[in-house]
Image 1 (tube, rainbow, N blue to C red):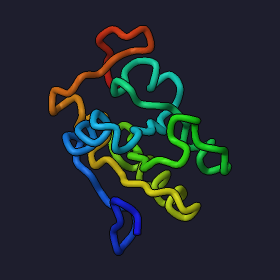
Image 2 (image 1 turned 60 degrees about the vertical axis):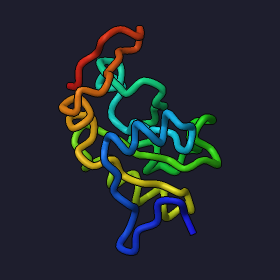
Image 3 (image 1 turned 180 degrees about the horizontal axis):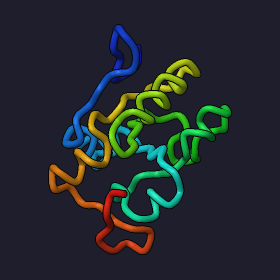
Image 4 (image 1 turned 90 degrees about the vertical axis):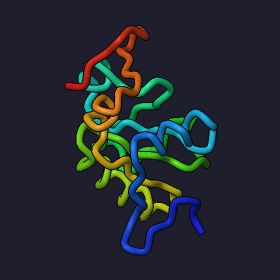
Length: 121
């Protein structure tokens, strides 16, 4: 049984739970937004793969392979779709409710690609 199983599809997880699990090394944050969105601001330590690549069946980034995945996007809609697709492939995956908007609202760190303070676009 997957770590974050949910009877009606991929489990939902809050941004603080996602941060805690990622920081503890229990799971990998997978940002499924577009490249410009990720570059402008993402969760530190997250890995990136756009939804279109997930939908096409691309291999997960190396850091996420064989590990529980926490899918995140801007609002939680694209990451929900990604979570459903990944779950169908047998990936242990949860959707981060509220996405990066909720992450920023919770005053969790957001970095740009240079490691500076970023913004959610």
